[in-house]
Length: 407
Image (cartoon, rainbow, N blue to C red; front, side, top):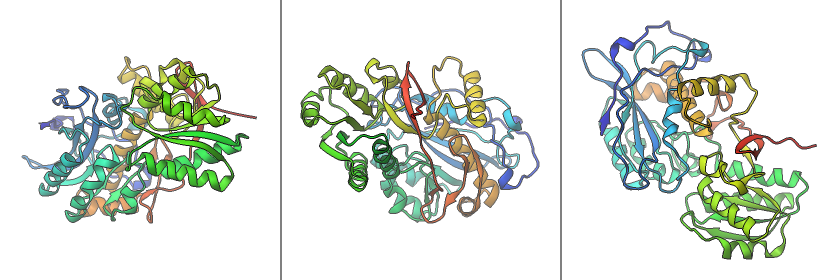
């Protein structure tokens, strides 16, 4: 494990603010040494985060960030963590929590359920840890949830879209991610609203994500009268989807839907066009490999975050991020979600206090926390997810996702 903590001299004391007026915090400066490479996928890393108090000459608040390689979601890039510290002073963001510095610590989980359990045990055993973020994937988060619950340590899976993360969890599991079910229900509704009557579907044949996502899409399609001519389960590790694709398009669907991630969608859409199918493609992800795929042009998805948005809060975030990381070609939802997650965590700790009990109480009480993704975050206390999340239809043009407006 590599520990990175902020120098105390970077602390800027600030006045206490009510939770509804909390500005975006600016994370403290950190040591830039890198964690070791994961065993799967080299330098591609995903993030888990924990908020802890460090015992030293005086108490300071820390963020522990646990880093691993997500073998299932190869779209995740190291830039996710940059969303936690995009730099700049827009909005007079204050540092830390009530004047205490925020620093970062790393540990490698490899997004492995067994290792995520081990990490959870470490966090729970350390009584100074007051909040844990992650794992990045629901498959790794869910097995660790009982440990966090028994330790009364809030688990904030800000990227966990599997509904089971919160549905089968307890008051200690929270997420700001739109659920997979809600996402693909929206997709079915939107496709139908565009005058499409039939679709073929491919979906990742995984029990924790792909199959539940397809089931949600299928149920909504049946509800709105959208015919699925064929559905094929596929694996993200495959390099040849042509047998499944040939079977899927045999029924001559008006459009094609892929329920998966960016890297597998990039391979799939290329092969789909190669076998001659030219209908609309609903799928993909705002992710480097997909965005750079020539045959992905014209793909349509519902987006929570749009880099090209004219919304002032999004523009401010994108501008600050590009200033801090000028070599990055795009700012994606990964960075925006990570940045929002830090803001929500800090707001909760400000509201309830920097203890495990205080953070839990803060998540139950915070309202209208400033958010790049949603504008403002207020949790639905029954679901422990964001109230009324919305998606925007977007289309990939010239390697960039833009809002898709139809007559």
